Length: 369
Picture (cartoon, rainbow, N blue to C red):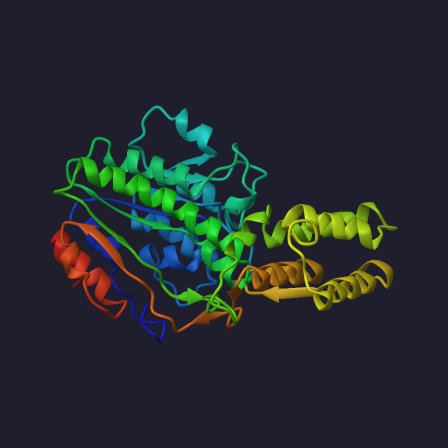
């Protein structure tokens, strides 16, 4: 939509569909969240989740993937509405829950919506650092999307792949989790690159971001780097919050040593990384307030409300690991743009973000008018 929220624009995805190409929109967060919604929906507010999800039907795009839908039965004005899932199924979509459901689908060229299994997180796939082998991953969705969009198709396809939780980890200023999310996204990029190698004269891959988050900096006062310290972190800020909450709940008499051992096991602080006395005192004071005085504090970011002790532990590890952050929000740093394949020579300079779909349209001979 335009800045007034009243005039709809045609996205590059619609341009591809009008040219007879198949279209896929996939993400590591919910299918109705802002970035992917801008490719298929025309709503005035990013929080119009039900209305955004319903536009899947009118888009007639071929493949959607992500964790789930945030508000499948509630409109923007908080009214009860018919569930999106029967509406989507009536429109011809196969709603598949989990990678096994996709594997068992006989016709992979059907119109598909691939989501987490029942009981899995709705708002997003699990952070890569927290995932188990059975969890649905962005790479699973990417592989499925490429397979389905390519099968029985001679006209080509457009696929948007978003590593949405990179942003979430940066909002929480969690460097180790951010790194694992970027590596996870890179696995999907590798799948796209493998496809490109099979069809180098027909494929364009563009990798970029809508913005940087957090003002991430490497080095915080010294030219020596200790980023290897980050490898000691075993779980995300969110799971560390849960672990501390469970310790508080299951062991009301938990000692400072109990908490310290938990932090050490999950971050390496105390056990593998010697921390400053001021940091130890800050953590012990937070333990006193939370576990002894029962005044639980939280540290809020855009997509999380973490236990204060967890946030403090991650912050200390970041600093010890030579990482600094400017804020918990978006920054004005340049977003890099990488491209390979047909038309990639157009992506050779700094550009406005709105130039990117125009250059893709030129390479693919699409009309954005």
